[in-house]
Image (tube, rainbow, N blue to C red; front, side):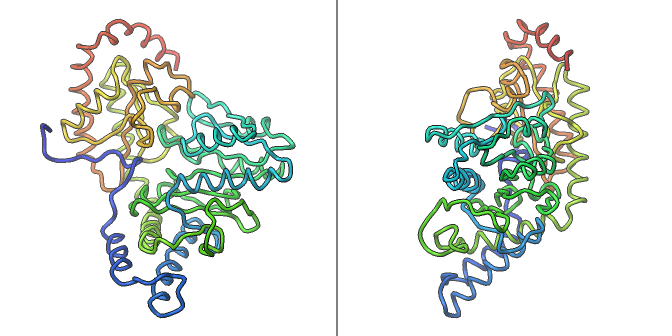
Length: 403
């Protein structure tokens, strides 16, 4: 039973609530546009209009042509399509080498493992201690048989924003296709695919207040990865299956809204982020910020509390009505320490005590203050009961002093 009734939702990196304006469009599409968008009569044309509008809205938000946007069921499908479609396509030309980083989302890492089982070779790039992939490491890993480089735009756990423009330039120099998983970045920071120079980019609607079950893959004109789903002629014959009309209407409206006042939204979330980081690091001994402070997503706070298990903190916070996470929601059933935190050099005992708080536009300064106040009560009390904290306090202190 919770101590308080009010819910403070601070897990916007996992998913976001559907915006009222988006729900209105989705409801209209569900209740009115009952036809199949591929049907050639008025009810079908009505449904197609929702699809065309949504595609145009998404394309405008990332500065590409509507014909370069292909709707999927989620960000994971978009990642799988970009990676596996490219691998199978370019393997015909003898290119069976792929490059990614050690701290990608599992949609990317597990796609790579699946391809390794089929005889492909994968290079997993190291991550710097402050959470970045270095373009020079990408260039050093490229070989004549390299088909694809895929590096996420912003890490889903520690929020560090990667130098994708520089990485894409390296890929173009060597004639290698470049994909970025931008699921955490789209709707959170400015995205211009023309400026970035990427060949493919994945997104997921539920990360920016659209419904779950709708994503998209940007594929630059002239880039032709093999299809992941075959069947009918939908999505320009690139992704079969009757279109999710309501989802497409929702993702278009949501992204239009997310990018319409983006600078104002970013400034608000940065204020909450910086207040939270400053207060936690000041008031809770040996708390450690994971990843760069300067070059991270506006709403992302990832902090380790050595001496404790993240699950314990998570349950205590839930008792106080605060929703947060210990890492990626897609891997929440695992007791292993985060692969992201291990990739930046955190020892397992510190990685286990890490929490992710992610602010959205709906969050307030009062909620940030309440989070900090609650942590300042929870952490000392739990540490006083923790054998791990009492036994390893000096080791933890020495590690943190090396930062």
